[in-house]
Image (cartoon, rainbow, N blue to C red; front, side):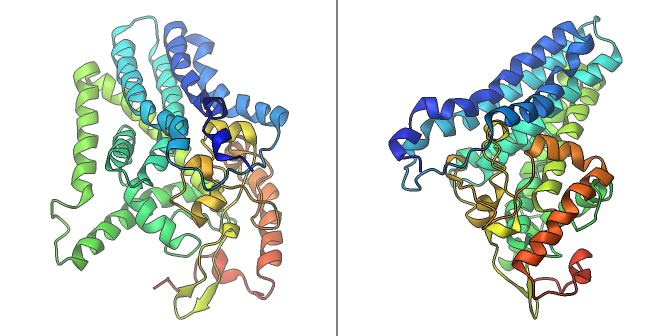
Length: 377
């Protein structure tokens, strides 16, 4: 147990600031070009996979009596990241569209790397910020999501995913045996629709039409339009194209993680459209220390769904007795997800073990496999 006075020390929070090292890497890549352009993907995916092997698991949990003041250094990294990512993204658009030492392919690779940053770190930090009650933090989440043209993720995540995870009504819960290449186009389509419908239904309960100005989709569209206009103002159509490359890369990174987090895990249908409450067993947990530094404990996902309002330093990790465990951290698991035969060989036996452990009374899993159980009420 990490005591509050220990948790509050900046030295304890410092490893979570490792994400900042990716910003100068982006400029090193832009200035040098060539093979250096592979530096960011290699760092985000392979370096942390290797580092996990050396530093092992982090099985310590923070004392939940810690106060907001104890978490100052942890909150600070998520707050300063927003302007830093904004400045880096648009400064790189200015630099890349004005230089002649990078070929078109090199520019695309540069902004693929920028998308690794805005997906691995930016969207992840937006996820932390959108769960907070402070309006400024929620606004900063919206700004980060607008930079990758995925603003509806906030509505989908808060109003749909957390409420319906592990049921047929949640587009983001990957079905058993569903490869990522099928999951990805499905979730892109269904998440946008479900997010819009969730906001529309909230307005309808207040006797307001969907186009009422309180619908956050107006804010989403305005922020995203502002980002595209700024990209055009700085770099013309080439700037817009490069902006879209990084946005597409970031969205792909997000949905890879979404695919991993709940693959094959379902909540038990209790009859009449009722489902059991969300428990730690309904998300895959991973205690790999280094990748949790980069991802600010996102891999402690079992606790996040159990207690969504906890800030990331307070998220608890679980043992196999309480939550299913991934064999590796997200860097390796997301790479495996891109290769369906490897993914199925790695994860399908674990899903079957999970079913035997938690739901031995269920003998026919076919409706759960196809998400064909009754929709939740």
